[in-house]
Structures are given as C-alpha cells and as structure tokens.
Amino acid sequence: MSIDTNMLADEYVTIRVPAKPHDFRERVCLYVNSGWGVWITPRNCDQHNSTVSRGDLHLQLWHPAGMVSILTPSARTNGEFELWLRGERIRFGCYRLLAEHINEVAGILVPCPKFVNHFQNWFVYSAMLGVGGRT
Image 1: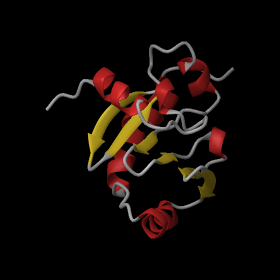
Image 2 (image 1 turned 135 degrees about the horizontal axis):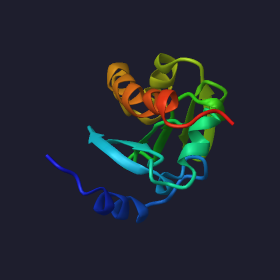
Image 3 (image 1 turned 60 degrees about the horizontal axis):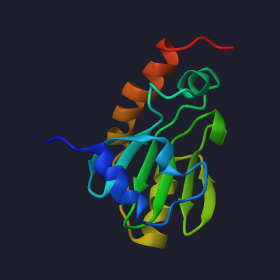
Image 4 (image 1 turned 90 degrees about the vertical axis):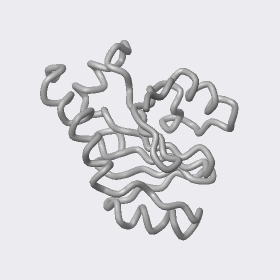
C-alpha cells in the first residue's frame, strides 16, 4: 500500500498544528499505522546535514486525531522522549512511562517500542553514522 505523503500532509494541515519543535509540517511522513504517523526531517532539506551533525535528528510520532506528538530522543531533547499533549510539553526518560502517561491522559495506545526502534535504526541512527561529519 502506498501513501501519498503530500495528500496526507495537506489533510493534517487542516487541523490545529502543535508548536515547534512539534510542528510536523517541516518533516515528511514515512509511514502511518493505527492512527500514528512517523515523520522525519527529509534528507533533501537544507537543514538535514546540520541537524544530523548536531545530533538533533529524531523521529516524530504524530497522532492527529488525538493531537499527540512525540519526539524521539536526540540532542534537542537532551536524550529524552518529548511529549506534546494538550498544549503541554513533557519529557520522559523511558518509553514505557511515556506510553502509560498518554494512555492515562488521552486514552491512546502508542506504537510498540520495536516499531519505533525499527524506524529509528533505519532513518535516524544510520543517517547519524553515515551522512554528515561533525562540525
């Protein structure tokens, strides 16, 4: 099944957009599963190499129906998961605690950790190992 990410992004823009750094419009959607989109800074973006070299590259998990955004650990989040939910930003050192909080507050199940790790390995860690040198 292929997903037209331009169409997908256009649909998401019609809803309320989270504040930076949780604004998904500067990223591209890699995959959608169970209401969660996996978003990342595109490689052809001017900021990609500098983002990688600073250690700021991360995934964004975006659940538009629940207005929930998760940034995966990076230098930008001091190595923690950052949650944007109901206009509030909260950091968690562990995915399990993040998942429990989202389920308690919003009644939404997050993607399984293996799903997130798969995308982190392929699109974050591999880029950080091979794309740009540190400046």
